Amino acid sequence: MPISLARRWIEVNDRMQRGYAYELAAPEGRDFHPDFRPELTPKEMLALGVFGGKYMTDTRAEFPADWFEGAKLSPERADPSLNFFGVAASQPLSVWRAKGWIHPDDPRGWFQWYCRYHLGRRLPEEDDRQIRRWKAMRRHIAQIRRHCRPGDCSCRRRQRQALLQWAYDSRRM
Image (cartoon, rainbow, N blue to C red; front, side, top):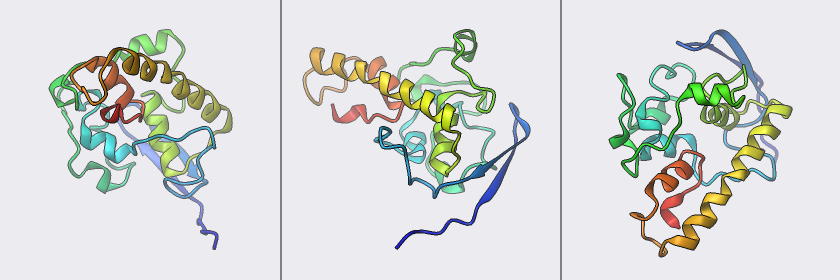
């Protein structure tokens, strides 16, 4: 039986966006593009430890409260010790901007896009671009498999953390 979704709007007012609104056009966590199969949900990623805990500290009003239960967050500054692999694996937002990786609808980058996509927002052109970027991260999986023994999470921790931050469960490699 198909699930009916009453369309609703989310309004965003945080430190990086004021008065931005988007429509939820799909059920939460469902109806993903067939080429996009993330292994972790945003809630799981936040609980594992991503982006030094800094990424989502002012966005609680936008996302489901249960995403933040057990989330490893650092309101002051990024703290790499909160990351699952205990290492920094992110480039500064300024680098992302300089490379043209930031879309105006998602000024925080890929993870913000993924959180909103998971909630049900759909922006076809931007979704296609971000899914291509997500797929490109697979090259790191091949490198881990080539250079590390299966299950050795101490091998290539930065690459593993980066993959975790792109919703690949690098703990299982």
